[in-house]
Amino acid sequence: MKLFKSKSKAIVAVKADANSDGNLRFVSTRFLESELDGSESTFEDYFFSIYRYSYKSSSDVKTLREQLCNDYPTNVIRVGDYFVLEGEAAYLSLSSYYKALINANHIGEDFREYYVERLAEITKKHNGSQSLPIPINLTEGQLSYDSRVELLASIALNYGQVVAVDKD
Image (cartoon, rainbow, N blue to C red):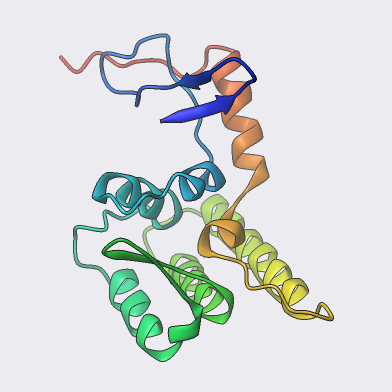
């Protein structure tokens, strides 16, 4: 997984796992989207970063995305055997996901407030992109990108607040 390109060479990052103590990195949804190459592993990482579900498992999100793929074929970007939604289809998928989270009984009020804010931000991005003289269709990754998460994760990593946990 390439993280940065310089004039000399690309810096390569290895996925964090239980053995990566002290070598953790944050990878944004934007980056994961740019690395989509049609492989199952890159799509799984991308999908999970947006929806917090494994693409391999059955879910209402996956079912809705497949329906939107059929209903909005011009808003589908094929990536190997997988697809990324853009425009109205991406917005409908993400807004449905966040509305479901907002209405879930199992989450705390702080999470609910965060999801309400995220839905408002996604709606604002989508409406803004569609109201341009030449509308722009944003992808799921572009609509769901949260700069606060990137900032706070980077701060936490830099301050050593993300630590490996002994599984014993």
